[in-house]
Length: 264
Length: 302
Ligand SMILES: Cc1cc2nc3c(=O)[nH]c(=O)nc-3n(C[C@H](O)[C@H](O)[C@H](O)COP(=O)(O)OP(=O)(O)OC[C@H]3O[C@@H](n4cnc5c(N)ncnc54)[C@H](O)[C@@H]3O)c2cc1C
Ligand SMILES: Cc1cc2nc3c(=O)[nH]c(=O)nc-3n(C[C@H](O)[C@H](O)[C@H](O)COP(=O)(O)O)c2cc1C
Ligand code: FES
Image: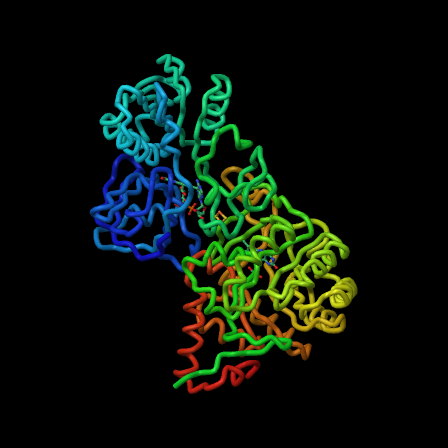
């Protein structure tokens, strides 16, 4: 892991309240899809770092990209960043998505709810690198609707067949990502997902019903991001490796878990 | 000019007066990539109990102005795994190890203390009688002076290492509590643990922390902590380890002037994983700047 001041290379708005920021950092040479960074604010009143997934990395250029929705102080500050600004950044944290599990699968389904899309875009690129043909991958991307805007969908096109859904019916299937999976009769044999808890619960149920593996990325409040504070736990089916109870650390044993392993 | 930063607490020599505050640094393992543990005065480990503890439901943490609240509930793997994994890990480092001990009952504290008696890697024990986030034990012992004195003397009878009693700030008179620990035979006291606090998520009409209340830490509590360290260190003869919102060498010096022989850095480790190294450097440059040759010149100097 690296802890350093990283410089902003580029910052752009993708949709209402959604931004993409590229940083120059050594983390680019270490990270994989599904991992995240802890990024500091410049305020001496907001002392905790914010966890943000890595949306992409260019190890040669030494650059990583973060895509995030403005949700409060830290993300708002980041959204105003200009080229040359710098932020304290720590990472890569967490385990990442298991790319190898997709190896012999016929139909790989990526499900992203809203701002869950960034780590899955990174994953789709990693899957392609691992030799997964575009025909085997479907990405279902769910959005709130017209007002919240649509983002990253074009970038997914290169790696996967893309299905869109929106809560207000303004784009793609009218409804949730799960409605879209049903309506388009997608029959996956493995799922990777990131999004709101309600969606992840539905993904877990779907995977259990079909008897297929699903790897889901979870969120929790984090203080350290390195496994020291035990603030970010999730109830697990089996005894966790750190505390030997049934509470794994999302920042360290996660954020990606096999759905049937976690009690959500 | 070289400055002597070493201090001695209950016969144990610390190369410098800086250590982590229990629960904010794991057992050092999680931060060893960022902080050379050999440079610390001590590594203080996360609270450990006789058997594994699950801790509280999530959310367990919330950010607050210049600080944070936590209600981890002392999740830990229990003393067996701790000795096998965490103590073995720490064997490779040249620093003191202070083990923070928690329990629901006197018997549970004693069990852990006895299990550690034969562990030569452990220089001191810190007895956490001040965790605000577990219902029984913990803080109950730390807020009643008779119970505090009693548990201190019971622990002292079984302990093979010097005993630090970690005091709660959630009391009316900290001096009384410091005296009770001293009367029970404590070799040192440490303070402050977190201040009981509450935060409400007004838009969802919910508590920000599942446990409803949590312990407040960070720079927000520093002036309270400095006052309590001052009061406690003037009430007893045993050494005091001070903590509460330390972020820099200057903050550490402030605690030492108030009477602390050593200091601990807590939630600021989360903000900056290299914080303690900077605090050590900061104390040293303060001394150089102001002509202090031996750190003892500033301990309790006001
Ligand atoms: C592993 C992980 C990966 C994430 N990846 C992304 C991403 O790629 N893009 C994105 O837009 N968001 C992501 N999030 C959510 C993101 O962390 C929060 O939106 C962000 O912390 C909000 O900070 P703020 O300062 O803007 O809000 P504030 O309300 O000012 O934050 C106050 C405190 O609450 C914490 N907090 C608030 N919301 C969340 C949340 N949803 N999850 C965890 N902590 C929260 C903050 O970190 C901070 O400590 C991720 C969260 C996790 C746990
Ligand atoms: C996440 C977290 C976990 C903690 N766990 C423990 C613990 O296990 N035992 C203990 O005695 N104190 C624990 N504390 C209290 C700290 O050791 C310290 O007393 C307090 O946080 C004040 O210092 P600070 O303001 O520098 O953080 C914990 C504090 C935090 C923030
Ligand atoms: S955020 Fe501290 S253990 Fe996960």
